[in-house]
Image (cartoon, rainbow, N blue to C red; front, top):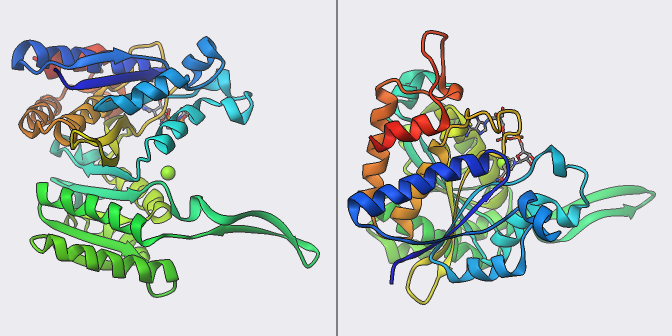
Length: 360
Ligand code: NAI
Ligand code: MG
């Protein structure tokens, strides 16, 4: 049977860019004989409107069964005043948690034609292609004890940076596996100089490396890592780091490449029975209420997220590269959505116009 894909367009431009991904999926079926069993369902505000919950149990169950989930974006002003328990982002958080997606993959890739968009000088970023692997389900954002407590007549805010060996081991394996498919280098970032969790992190990553002797491993303190990312980002291939440092370092890396409308992501969990990892693919951007309904959204982040699905869930690296090369070509030809317009001399294409160009 065909590999299965659950599509959750969500809210705002999430639905608009996902409609374009559907066209891309259709193209691969028609032109490359790559057929998927695609089902579509609601998430976020759209699910709340229909069911009073941002993720219906049936949708959650379906997400656990399929080979990969593709999500657009959730949220919007319409839902800002909802109770926290039913807020749109709770739908996304539930997916991540129940699918146990512990490895968050954030590529930072700079297409030559967009090098001017970077916050850095062109020669520092042109041709950049790095991947940050951020641990997503543990660390400071989840560790106990946490809370605001009363102590000696004043309040104290507490979070706990906590990692077990098993948690470090599995995300390290994800990073090494990835490096094997890329340029064979992993740089692990922590603060082993001042943090116990950092000492353990470095120890476990070094131990896991014994199973990946073909991959080159280096270690770096995360603060130096932030500096190096901005000074000379091309020295890296795969960066492996924890939840908190990864949150910051991946946002920093994102700005090396320019527009939010260009950034894909993947979140991977443990292998399923068929050997494929549990997987959720989504653009980094949100539902962009300021441009929704106007045909202005850049579909590339979402299309590149599908390319990641082709590569990491369906072993179709060649087809993923075909898609990425088409996007690179279109950008080199000067095709631009509004978010990529540097100067007033060019005119923007619409969301579907961008997809037309990529498919052509
Ligand atoms: P946002 O990412 O939706 O938008 C930030 C800015 O970037 C806006 O000016 C928007 O027009 C622009 N932008 C984003 N994606 C674009 C694209 N594909 N093409 C062209 N321009 C694009 O972040 P914001 O405004 O902070 O949040 C809006 C809503 O989205 C909120 O409800 C927020 O909670 C939600 N959100 C959802 C996320 C998710 O579903 N993973 C992630 C971030 C925000
Ligand atoms: Mg962040």
